[in-house]
Image 1 (cartoon, rainbow, N blue to C red):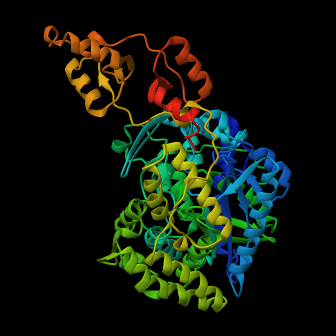
Image 2: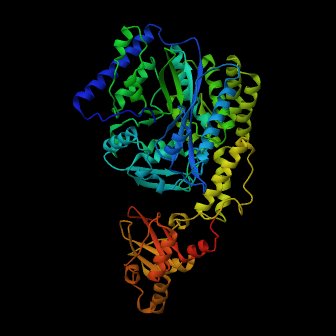
Image 3: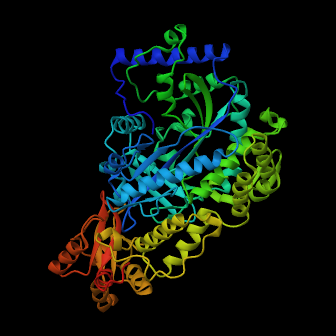
Length: 626
């Protein structure tokens, strides 16, 4: 999430000073481009690994800061939520065994994280979206206490002028309002960096945009959010909506989202890309700038462009232009931000090699991509790939082709040629691109999760199924076999120990509700048809206003001949005792016994989110809940 030393920009003089430095950074960058002061004789790769922390019951842990302190390694840093951390790997020259070096360092650092996490009864997991995240973990108190995160959250909410609204539709549908940016914390990525010669930056950037869809299509690993089957790579939609500052009128204003694929092919230079971003996006964060970039350049020093770097860190392009300084030399690079974390290190390294091979193997006919492909085709392809994964039909250079055929027949040969041109070890090329080929022909992380989650849900409650899925994912990662070799989950009897402790763990979320103005006979018929003994009653605003029980049905049936015109409001109970997802199960049991009732509607933020019944409690007491 970038630099943590930030401040508010409401003070007029300080805001003006920061903006001056931002504009001077652009001028300094243009001068460096003109004077060939940006490195162009070497190509390096780099990466950032975001990962999840889970408890021994496979739910999100909240002790990232304690683990980070215990690790005590500058490669590690915090992320937005208390259940995520990030590793910044060392840049390595693109040649010979570079991918093996990255893999070995990543393995070593993840092992280090895992060792220190075990001291806190916590495990490390690679997942694009952690399956067991619930809305409880998306409250503000789960945000990492950092001035950057607090200020970012405050400013984004201020610009939006209202709560954030999520509406995601896949096989299932998820619609919810949220008061912070923490839904973004559900996303964990394996971010890839490739250094680019400055004169080739625009051609490389546009090519990176064009190939995003097919790469994403065969790399998806994030199909589930809050137990719903959504997109093949749900992160794409979730990230955009969770950081969207645009109000409901944005369609009329044609504003650009902060999380964006872009609107046109890039042109000019990397400086022009930055100029467009400054023009299109308000400044969210600021800090005191100690050294002015133009002044540093006049002294013969290479500036770090701190104001530009901070602003760029608040604009979330899926392919992000980056500027950096290493060993006293400036460089520019492209950051690939759409690849999910996991399913294994091997899968991530295969994705890395595939992308780098395609980037370095770009055929010359694609140097001017605008002559070959419409930008809107590239953008539409990206959204389709996020939705459908490798089943996507792409519009590629004027023809329609399946993502699988495009990868196998056209892109893998380009990637092979690109890596060979960079003199990457042949054995590594064959292993990593072989994984891409086998995954494309076989199964992706998203497909494996969905197939097994559906199977688990036939016998298990949602919380249990998600925990089983998470545990098996962790076990498979420990073995290190690529996801196309993962087996189906067969036996769940000894996978997890009993750990349900909160109402949210055992409540039913698939609810049958009735409106208070419905005809009573309709409500009682539904209860008989579905064999349910408790039905929440909602008013016209969708809020809980009563409860209808089997006792009410029986009383209604006894007098039905005289009450054909009765509505639900006439026979329901208005006095409703409720609970919340965070309530201890034993406390819910105590409430039901004390009040001699058979159910408790579960309410969160005034919204009905579930129901807990005597049947749920009996299953819990009998240890049937995993």
